[in-house]
Length: 383
Image (cartoon, rainbow, N blue to C red; front, side):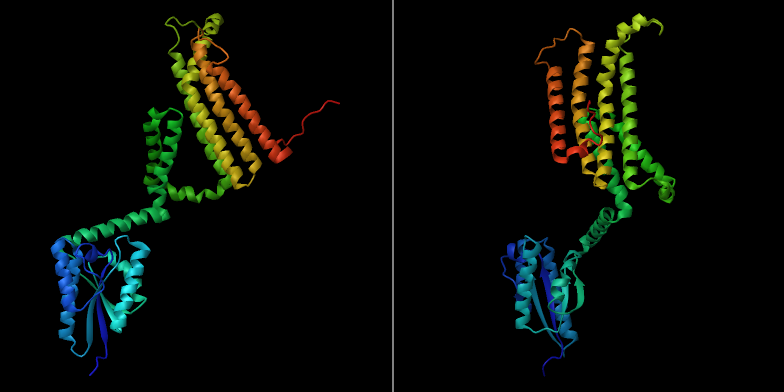
């Protein structure tokens, strides 16, 4: 009498270790064939988990045949590809179809060597219903595999869950952006201070539960585009103040031991070049960086408002800051060392000419593209 239920015990080797290591072509159909293939795989690599899965599938097949004599059972092993992805999935579908053409199963029991193969469930279910899943995990590595599964689950949550990604990705992202600006402005020595400042703010907000209170007062804050300008402008002002502080502190070291009172104007006029030069040498980078951050934030606001003409104004401002920094630093060196020769090919002259030329070209390009939108006020003309 024909069996009313026909079940396929199917073992999946997603990375085709049985083919690559044991040289066995898949699909492998039948009890003896699977035992021989699993033996070859175990001999070629005794630590291979797929061999244990195949032996586990054979053991499950024998138990089903013994416990359910009125039903029909078959065992098969299909393989994917070591390259993974679509190629492996397509190969497993072809082999599964080949097995089902030879054995018309009404259901399947999936035998896997761990949690990773459960991702292949849709492939099997698209061809035959799965009635059960049987895990064959080596005892000494079961806890390790479960631990890795939990670790990857939490890592994925840290990346994809917005509640956690704000801290796990947002804070490192802010630090990397700030470090980039510090490196560009030769202020890497302040990286520790900035890191402590940012992490301190984050820990303070999270530790005292101020996050919800900040969200609660959000309606009182200005619109998001203006808030962006406010934040970038505030950061720019703070950096500019730090730059001024560094410049003043450094310039103070250039004063002679016998400092005269402030009302001795002649003394201070004589010291003015050294003091100004020292101030600009040490403070220019942070001041320019603060102004650049403010311009970038303002440009981002204009981008959100789709005011593209204003974005070009910010771009021209950034170009101006770039050249102004170089010009100020070279001027500071001359103020400190007046004997520095100044020729037509001196850096100060070259930077000045290049800066003026670049700004003029940028203004002309923007004016030709946007016309008088770039100049909101008409030029004064004499009668």
